[in-house]
Amino acid sequence: MARLLKSAHTEQPWRIHALAPDFTVEDVWSFRMPGSGPGDFPAALAALRASGGLARQPGPARFLFALRWKLGALLGWDDPRAGVGARVTSLRERLPADLRDAPRGEDSDALPLKGVYELATESARELANKTVHSVMHLGWVRGADGDHELRMAVLVKPNGRFGRLYMAAIAPFRYGIVYPALERRWEAAWREHRAASAG
Picture 1: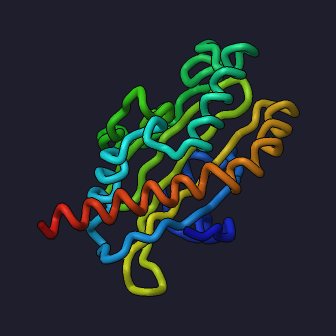
Picture 2: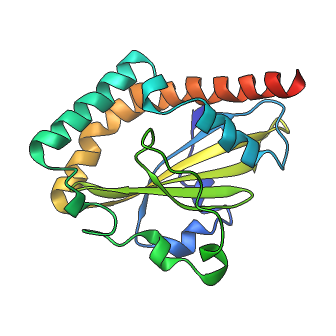
């Protein structure tokens, strides 16, 4: 995994650019998918889903998420009235006709982000609460070594000054704990998928 410049996301011809021009690109990361080819994005997504949600993350990452949900419950950050469809309108309301007919991707209680769309080389999921409206965008890009890699971009629209302070406060935890945990889990999931496919 490597942290990338924001241009690694903005210079790709993703559909999300037209749908979320009022969002800021917060983070861009790449995840290695050894042996992958141009048509393997659906298989990569399936491998990530099979790897489990937050419950399968390493202890430090699970602790951080548990702490965040506890704080959210105590302080009312995750009140349904602050979520998608309440405080903010879902990005699905912005979809052009061809994307409205596209799959959204599977939703589950293990993953708090809900599907917006899922295509052959990119997908988007969203989450909103009292701090931020956030989009996780996954894209499929040919890497320098010839294999394809998974690119994750986090796009955000903070809810005022508090939302901006919140994003700044959690940045060290994202970079130091959450994203490295994702790297290990997602890349292991891809290797397990490859091994199962070869067997």
